Length: 446
Image 1 (tube, rainbow, N blue to C red):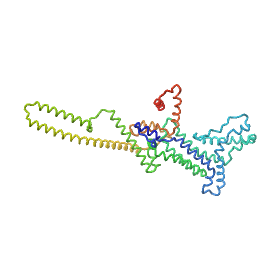
Image 2 (cartoon, one colour; image 1 turned 180 degrees about the vertical axis):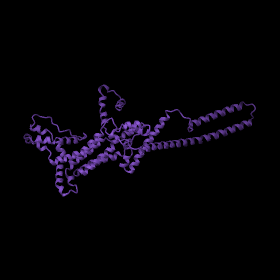
Image 3 (spheres, rainbow, N blue to C red; image 1 turned 90 degrees about the vertical axis):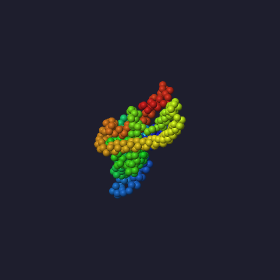
């Protein structure tokens, strides 16, 4: 991002390595999930045993739950494979070795899907492993006992929340960044509710909450996230006011106004270069002043020619005329110098006035947008952000420009990563003489 910022600025393009940084939502969610799973694997039932306020009637249940955590129930599920059956030759024929479902740390939701699969198949596994030949092979030891099954169900409940949320924001060909931060907050809200319901897992859930809060804090420093939230007509600026501190709200509001002002300035420049020149008086430039002095000198020269040719003009009158001309020329040059200084001041004042007017217009449009009621049907109820801004592009022209910039940005980087990986399909042996510039253009075109 730092390299991009430096490169874009060399090209005259405004870019911020922090303000334009959008983090991959599914990856952040997966990091939070792995933090919870690593906490269970690393600490076992230690944190569960350290929980205060465990009443005596529930002491046995508490100890059993902690003991089940010590066995690493997720690891137990992962061990339920057909490898032992192959080794002991209890299967009718050798079967390809596979787990119940693929489980990989870098594969989002894979652990949640694995636990869901084994819980669904638990009764069938019990019946199968009751067969004497399977018991003799020791396969029945892979089954989850009652306490392990309970703990596994609770862990699956914890992981189901981020699974559904990351699926929601992994959509393609539709805007997802406007709901990224609210989705983070929703995960935090649901996990905190689970901490109350599943008290024994509360300290482990806290690992995931801390990880998400870390990335949410970073995202709040990104102007791109703020703009994405604001252009969502179902929440606008209200969500920021409800969730963020007063200082963060003020900074976010300033980011929005600065961006709208910048678009307003670009709009004015575009309109000025695409409409006929108006008859409005423009500030005098140094070139026009020099041109005026040139015409004056030419006029004075022609007068001298006429005076020389005049037979009735006396010498004293000629001297007086030349003296007056010199005096007039000197006073004009002095006046022209002061006029040039005044023109510079006028240019500066005019520029400041235009910038102030642009900011006022941006502020008025933003306030008018926020004062309108939010759209009741949010994205979850079928709100089409693209359609909304197509309809309202004339009502809020500056915010519409923001929407054009922000809506293409996705909350997930998967599509971009897939695109970059496709470079090998473009740079083939038959196209190995493509220049870097053409290759870059083709990738961006994709």
